[in-house]
Length: 236
Length: 76
Image (spheres, chains in turn brown, red):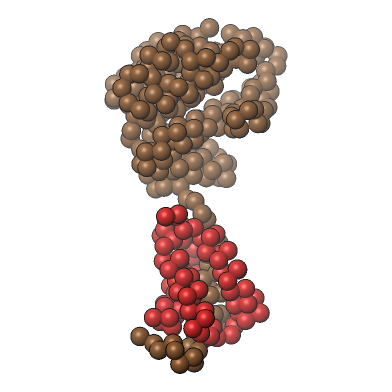
């Protein structure tokens, strides 16, 4: 142990092996390049997303969800998982639109407190409501069937929250009054807190109860390792 | 306790040791009684950064390790 009371300073010289830089500069230079967030190794790779920046951002969000679930931060996990699946849905439909060239998509930005929600503007033959629902429904269903890609923690919570939130987005119609539905309430009171949270969120955005119920059932079936029902959820 | 992030430590260094990352980059660090705590704090903060966030090449990782060892030896 040094005696600091004598007042003589202790010099820490620059390190010759590192270009005569002092230790503080070395630490600063290295840490300046380090990220504050990295995807956890157990998070799915999302290799189907070609844009590396977008893939990295989504994987970082998945890591955040994983950590939130571990810490029992249910609200944060649900909200971020919901935004994650919305981003994936938007990506999927944009990719589809690139191939077809008939669908015009426009992220709608801030809307109340749902900052990451995306609204879709349709054109041409997609203006039909039924076609709109069909297209969204099929996309969500495909993502839901591939839910193992999103299985970041092995808990039912993630799948249920993803499905609930996705269904909320799909079923949302701006003109409908947003009230928790009976279906949502029933689902939300089944057992766990996660289901309650998901049900509540679904209820906030719910316009199509059958769709939500279908996705809940499918998510639970996927999570239980059983085959999801063969029939798609009811689409209006 | 908040998670210690690399950007947090970078800000700490810029705030606490502005000279040593600019003008005095190649000068010896003088550890006095009055800056002992801040240097010890830096060592402690760097040690609390999660390993998975230290995404740097071999040379820079070695630099962090050597720099920490030098500071630790001076203050302990």
